[in-house]
Image 1 (cartoon, one colour):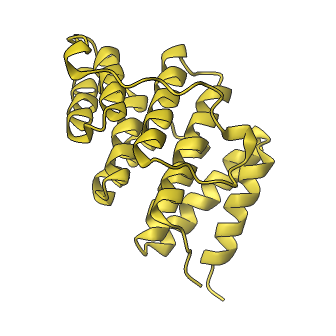
Image 2 (cartoon, helix red, strand yellow):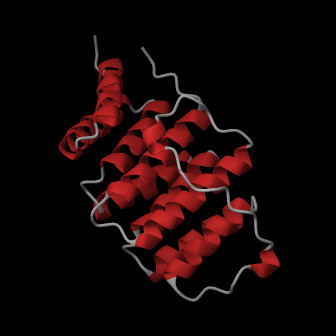
Length: 199
């Protein structure tokens, strides 16, 4: 049985899960949460619709930020500032410029997991799955115990037909979600594992 995951739902599951992870993570920085939430809300606005049925525990609790004109965006100098401007550009629907900003952020700070994730998320939303997978893989290299990004990569792999890779990601995500005590996403990962295992 193939996984039936509509592209938009896949992306929103991914955004919600990682945002939820940043909110709970003991090693997060305050900037990580703000950036992840800003990107989540911005891409929601760009899609004009947010799927229903997502667990309330992972839905963002912030008001939707207003798009900023490109002229009003500050001229960034640091990786964090490029990442923030990238999220503003996502709000404005300028995804190519957002990708450029996230790319500059990771050039300035090679271990900036949030910028890799944000860029990967935008790549996924534009259909560039190969680049999204590369960025999610980089986040995993930087944060190997991040259940959310393993789950996100599993979703992308499943939708591209990489069943063995998806199965490994979901198994690792399930184990990490169980350690975190996240029973909702532990069960979701288990459900995908059942769908992907050969009969």
